[in-house]
Amino acid sequence: NAGVTQTPKFQVLKTGQSMTLQCAQDMNHEYMSWYRQDPGMGLRLIHYSVGAGITDQGEVPNGYNVSRSTTEDFPLRLLSAAPSQTSVYFCASSYGTGELFFGEGSRLTVL
Amino acid sequence: KQEVTQIPAALSVPEGENLVLNCSFTDSAIYNLQWFRQDPGKGLTSLLLIQSSQREQTSGRLNASLDKSSGRSTLYIAASQPGDSATYLCAVRLPGAQKLVFGQGTRLTINP
Image 1 (cartoon, rainbow over the protein chains, first blue to last red):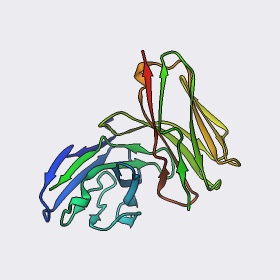
Image 2: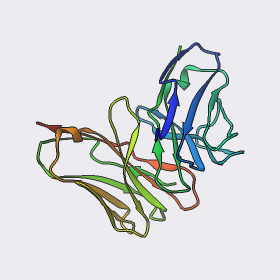
Image 3: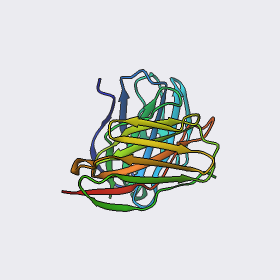
Image 4: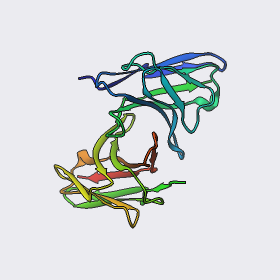
């Protein structure tokens, strides 16, 4: 099993550009989420989903959109990138409220 | 508001020592607690998950304990090895909540 797969691993954007971070899991987990990790701030929840067609906001949702059309995929869209969105992004999934599994991360730099 | 604290922020010990990493949380009404390790530039790897009804969990050389009443969890690493060097994070999930609250982590270095 591949677990949680994120692409791309690295990305550089200019301010105002848009892009989508991809996340896929092959464990048939209902729950998927996106976190960002910043020095001194720890991990913060951006958006999450408890199943296909259901999404909700986390702590820091502004500037990001998500959708969940299938159980496997949970893409994160940056609508108009800002330097404050420079971060490492992690996708995670779990079966219900059980053990959480993380992807390898996507490192984003916004110039 | 739930807050999770890990002290110390960094720890360096010689190879072979047994060691304990600490995690404290302010709200004892947790659903579960999970320990992770993170290697530089990598994602988080799940080590142990303890449900609120459990007192401890073991996996190989790792043992995690949970004391909800005092708001504390410890991760015990036996016979440490250089390969154990990483940042260790704990996270708690509140009942009915879909997010985990993470500590800032303890950066562990095992010296050969």
